[in-house]
Amino acid sequence: MKESKKILFVVNPISGIKGKKAAIEFLKTELDSSISYDVTETLRADHATDVTKEAIAAGYDAVIAVGGDGTVNEVGKALINSNVALGVLPFGSGNGFARHRKIPIVIKDAIHLINNFSTKIIDTATLNGEAFLTTAGLGFDAHVGWKFSQNGSRGFLTYSQIAINEFIGYKEEDYHLIIDGKELKTKAFVVSIANGGQYGNNAWIAPDASMEDGKLNVCIIRPFPAHFTPDIVLKLFSKNLTASKYYECIEAEEIKIIKAGKFHLDGEPREANGDLVAQIVPKSLKVIC
Image 1 (tube, rainbow, N blue to C red):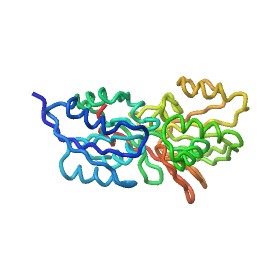
Image 2 (image 1 turned 90 degrees about the vertical axis):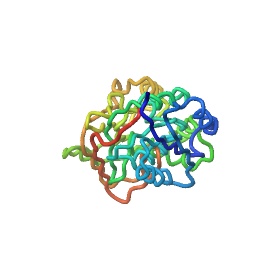
Image 3 (image 1 turned 120 degrees about the horizontal axis):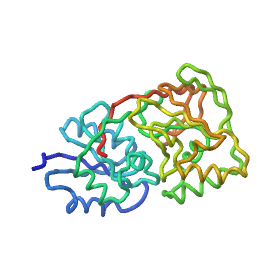
Image 4 (image 1 turned 180 degrees about the horizontal axis):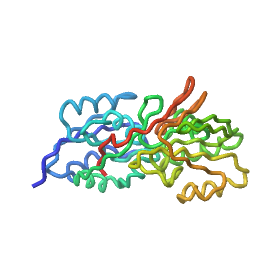
């Protein structure tokens, strides 16, 4: 007989794609009978973090983020260094964390994964003390993330259309980085700090990244001629970006970005008022995967 588990499902009603109500209905038929569960919907930004902290205190065995990478971040950061596991039912526009961890995008299959309750301890990271699980970054991806956050529509098609529109006229910026104590000054199209391998939708910015190696990957795409754009995009989506001469990836434990501007944290837009410092937090989060 399976050991009984108590799980909280935290639903972000506005993230990503539709269908969350149907997914919650699936729990009645697909979730193992040994699991008791509760469901709560978020009402505001950071609400998922607050209810997850309450779940830890209430003795839940796992909290399941029902939403996209932003929801996964809000739930996951509250679970860091606890014994309560993070699970995911992926409903985001990109689902970078779920895809990297090979959590099924098909919701019934993701529920069956929760039934198995097999867990691993993974690394997380911080940027100026704020936790992230998959990627943070500056440059074009952060610029598009800001535009996407201001758009009323969600989903991959909306994101892609914004990226295409913003690419024309985007100006690369100069970056001053200190990577494990070594200085690097470069002009870049993208500077990504990756704990996980992808942004989402199988766009692999850090093809060799691991969430279990105690390292972050500093991924730099340097300025490239416009006619190389299809090649860069193809390599990004074929997990082959390391083959591009315009790409560099450096493993590190601490990265400082001097006088940073707009950036993203697990896809959520942020703005710096000075320097940013990213650090790895090894073996800090239990994940159902």
